[in-house]
Picture: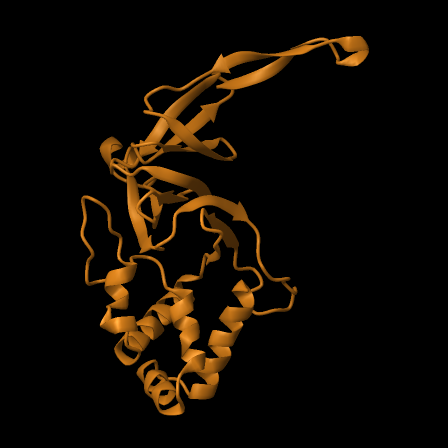
Length: 252
């Protein structure tokens, strides 16, 4: 609900009250809320994410769209007006997109899942910010970053990358997966794929995310392995090292 202060001016012992203006129902338990302009993103105990909009001229909150998957939410945030971020209790992150340009009302009422990633940690907080100081003339200085915290004390960084850079890093990640074996022979793609009680691990890996830890592992490769990976993305080892180090400076 939204409220307005009413009563005295606070001087001389005057008190204030919050007057209910409007409300919205239809959730199991609304646990988390993120706000950007008129948009309100709600993370529910069992019903995933809903997108609401506050209309001050009419004093109403109306639902614009929702994710119909049964995710038990542990945190939510807003990346931009059309893209939203969620964490759920099976240690996954996912991103949703508002289909504002869809042809039908039914499509517009559904949030489209555009990203999925298994973190392996119980994320319970998102915060705007960075772990490093940005210099105005630094490459990628305008890339927005978001911090996340987990119940075990882990701090992570999420960066929203330009499409061209994301596609390059996806190709680099695929090359590293072919060159660098997983610990104990486990598949990196399978580990990072979205998984819960309804979905088993997939072989095709994360969707809409790249693993920064895996990307940075390029810097620790033996020279012959580094040359093999660099050849796969059609760059020299020196140029690829520079790009990975630039990404490293962006995040931590």
